[in-house]
Length: 312
Length: 286
Image 1 (cartoon, rainbow over the protein chains, first blue to last red):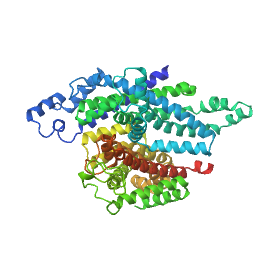
Image 2 (image 1 turned 60 degrees about the vertical axis):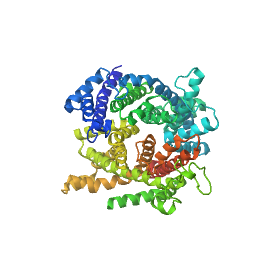
Image 3 (image 1 turned 180 degrees about the vertical axis):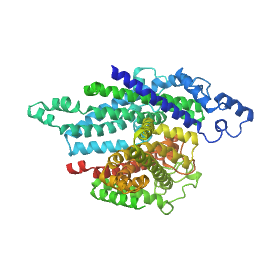
Image 4 (image 1 turned 180 degrees about the horizontal axis):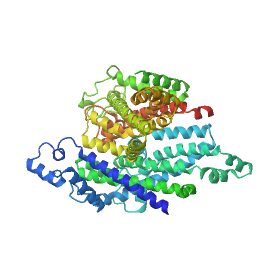
C-alpha cells in the first residue's frame, strides 16, 4: 500500500512540470498572441479586449499562478471560439476517444502477444520472419496512412464498414461497426510494438536455466510457455504498453481525423484551425494528465506482476 | 569532422555485416536520396504547373500516377516532395543529435545534481507524446519549413540525451580518461576529444532509426495542416489533399502514402540492421 502512495506522490512533480512546460510553450508565441489569434485585420479595441481576456496585460508570474490556481480547481479556461468551458467541451467527446483507445489496446494485445510468442518459439523459421516483417511494417506505417488504406479497402471498396462513423449510434451493432475499423487501425500498429518486445522478452526468458529444468521435469509445453515463460516475460511487455500510451494518443488523434470520429482528435484539429489557444492548452493538459496516469498504472502493474518490486 | 568520418567508417563496417534486409533498407534509402537530389532531371513534369483540363486523371501512360485536382502530375510532385521530407528529417535529427548528445554527455560527465536536473527534464520531455509536442510547437510558431524542423527537433532531443549519458557514465571512470585528466587535459577537451568519438557510432546508428520517426512526424504534421504551406509539394500535404478527394480519386492519397511508408521502412530496416550489428550479444547468437 505504501508503495502505491509513494508512487502516486511521485507523479505530482511530473504533472506539475508538464503543465509548466505547456504554459511556457503556449506563451512563446512570437509577437503578440492576440494579433496571431485575431489575424491581420483586427481593430486595436478588439486586440485590447482579447489581451485583457487572455490575461496578457498582466505580469507573466501572475498569469502563471492564476493558471495553476485554475487547474487546481479543475478550471481549464474558456474556449475562445465557443465560449464554453474547455473541460466541458472535452468531457463531451472524451468517452468516444476512450472507447477507441481501449478497443485498440485490446486489439493490440490480442494480436501482438500471440504473434510475439509464436515467433519466439519458432525462432529463425518462417513464422519468426513473418512476425518480424509484420512488426517492421507496423512500425513504419504512420497511423493516418494505414487508416486511409483501411478506409479505402474496407469502407469504400468493400463497404463492410461505414465510411463515416455516426456520432449518435442508434444500436450496439452500429457502435461496434463505427469503432471497429479505427480500433483495428490503431490496434495493428500497437501490435507491431507488442509483438516485437514479446518476442525479444520471450527469447531472453527461454534461455534461462529454470526453463530447461522445467522442460526436463516434463512440464507440458503449452503450460511451460504460458505459465513459466510468458508470465516471466511480462515486465517488458507492460513497459512497452505503458510507453506506447503517448504514441497511442498521437495516433488516435490522426485516426479520429481520418475516420471522422467525434473525439479529442477532432477537437484538437478544430483548436489548431481556429487558433483557439485556450482550448489547445486545455486539451494538452488533459493529454498530459493521461500520460502521467498511464505511467502510474504501468508502475502499479509492475508491482502486481512482480512481487519483488512491491517489497523492495 | 574527423570524428564524424570515423563514426561513418564504423557505420560502414556495421553495414557490411548487415543482412539482406539491412542492405535492402540502404538501397531503398539511396534511391530516395538520389531521387530527391536529381528531382529536376527525373520529374516528367513541373510539380507546380496547373492544367485544369487534365485534372483528377487516373494513372495512365501519360501521367503514370495520375493528376491531382489542379491537374498537376502526381509523380512529379512525389519526386519533389521527397526533398521536404528528407531535409526536415536530416536537419531536425542533426539539431536534436547535437543538442541531445551534448546534454547527455554533460549530464553524465558532470554528474551529481546537474545530472539529476537534466535527466528530470529529459524524462518529462520523453513522457510528452511526441506528435502532440510537435503539434503544439508547430501551431504556436506557425506553419513553415523552419518551424517544422524546430518542432520535430525538440521532440527528438530527449532520446539522444538519454542515449549519450549512459556510455559517458561508464567512460568517465575508465583508466584512459583518468590518465588524460592526470596529464592536465581540460574537461571540455576530454568530453570533445575522448568521449564523443567513443559514443558517436552508436549515436549515428540510432539517428537513422529516429530519422524514421522524424519523417513520420513530418508527414503527420503536414497531414494535419501544420506542414510546409502549399503549393510546395510535401508527401503529408499530398495525402491531405488526396484524402479530401478520396471518394473520386483514390490514387491521390495512395501513392504518397506508399512513398512515406517505403521511406520510413527503409530507415527502419537500415537502423535495425545497424543496431543489431553494433550489439555484440546479438552478433554472437546469429
